Image (cartoon, rainbow, N blue to C red; front, side, top):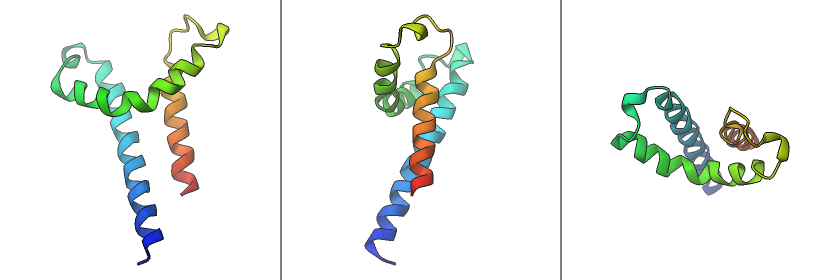
Length: 87
């Protein structure tokens, strides 16, 4: 096994774990009793650095201000999917 394949596999695993963390965070947001829990806080700390740049970018688009869905989450998830497919 070459160094390249090891690095590729680690990157692939990290990106997959980030996607899973984002999905769990999204599902937990639908359950009010889980908001503010330790797991919720951990998932927020892990996933927010991925989502925040997309949130800042999308907030500059006038037509999306006040939009009821969090498109930054979707954009971040799609970007992770693209990165995984490129690996």
